[in-house]
Image 1 (cartoon, rainbow, N blue to C red):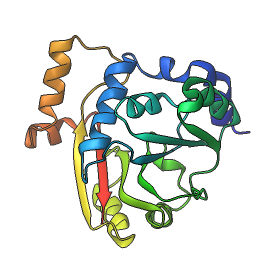
Image 2 (image 1 turned 120 degrees about the vertical axis):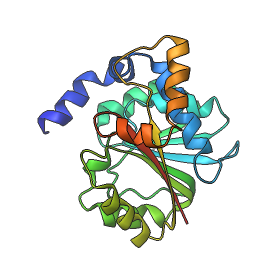
Image 3 (image 1 turned 90 degrees about the vertical axis):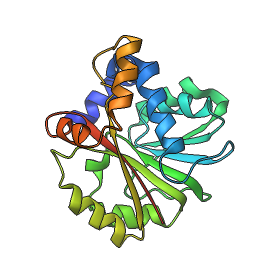
Image 4 (image 1 turned 30 degrees about the vertical axis):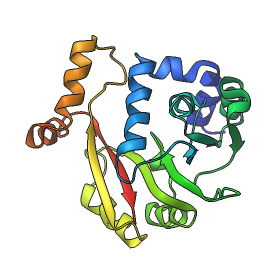
Length: 208
């Protein structure tokens, strides 16, 4: 077990609560964009959440009528997600590079984990084989060249790609008026792109 894997195992019991200053605001906005960005998800659609951690995102998606299947490589995270979601969702052990769901899914999501792909282009191509509507993930433009990632997506058959800045902070809880302003600024074009040079990430929705 690597030091990172050991950290995940030790913190699995309250991973979501440790990771986000305002769990509801952060994951609710993420779920909102998963549903709305790119081809819209409808109630009853199935989302496959790779590297799902303790399933915190599952709660926000289930609240929108979206079915949820979580996959994580850390056994302790799988158990924590099962405790959190109970019979409302299925959570299984698996590596995002190799996992194949038993049935096709409407959307595949990968958050805070795209760097675990051994070969990014191969991972996108693999996800395309079982994903019907869209692949959704977060992208740090200071860590990866956006043009390179978009090229890998197009090579995998994802010809329609939407990028949305995501300005709800992970480690700071904002007052509601400021939170609303942050969401509005996500649509501010050049101003949003300037902010991304120093902080925050894109949320990417890739479809055919």
